[in-house]
Image 1 (cartoon, helix red, strand yellow):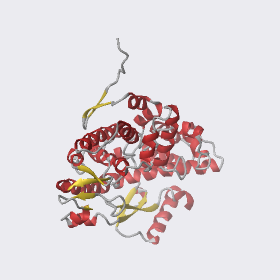
Image 2 (image 1 turned 90 degrees about the vertical axis):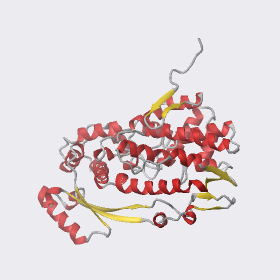
Image 3 (image 1 turned 135 degrees about the horizontal axis):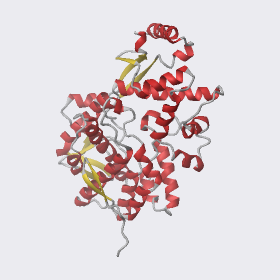
Image 4 (image 1 turned 135 degrees about the vertical axis):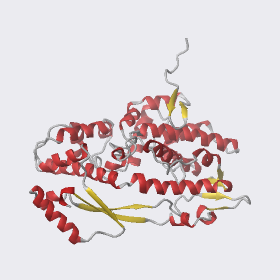
Length: 408
């Protein structure tokens, strides 16, 4: 009997069956570093707003790889030469593009490993895996870093119209139960082409591009930056800040040893292969387990923050188009210090302000290019007849203020 892999396909609720194109892809998916993505939520704490949003980075990575196989098929059909080595490189690069995400994805990015983005960590993982797989990821790494001599390959992995964005908008919209991000990824991919080494979209696909950019704007304001999800993630961050402060003050903390080990030590300078291996053990389960333990700590600030998050007893949050006045913040601080009998430094964990911004399209930075019927290539903004689309290239900033509901 032939020796075959037991797992040949994944049944995905978005695209149906997703295959494993070759042995290398299968082995990468089976690797513990990649399997860890099953325990990293795709949308952070958004499930506290959208109960169905429990999907993971594992789902997203497979979906992105599936879309990449479709893009390769379409481009080859249009006589764009893509070698077998380049195909494997593309599939590996998109499969591993998010492998560096930490617990709750963007919510705690840069927290466990200071000053290192998830893209940098993904590259660290890829380089580590490349040694284990005896150089088979050389092309994937070159594409991922944007060093490969054919720019469109990198643009398929990381640009303003890449397979990453095409998957997460549709997938996050599906699991959140909203319609705003339900883009026609198949239509967009079918309109892709390559001119002078760069990725372009054929002119008849411009309306699909417009819908894609509008969908991205709506998803950010309505889902990714939803005020309740934002509040929950801010609480999560403040829990970690409080633990770090208690550790500095030599306060004993029980539970969450995997999390504690990172809060104590790791930064850019100390990050090495041994630290990478330890980071690969860190996931949502560790963080939630730690928070469940810390809710009983005798430090009021830490226990209160943990209880708020676990029981969804969140802070009040107000969002405005202008910054909040210092007087308003100081009044809230004064009320909270009295309410909970805290110092001002402790009250700042419960009263704070910040800002959020959204820019759906960056003109000039890997701009989305439209291939006109006469062969001319232009920016999508110049070809679009929608005034709203031009507004998407401007950064919109909003300001938020958070405080306990008891202090209202």
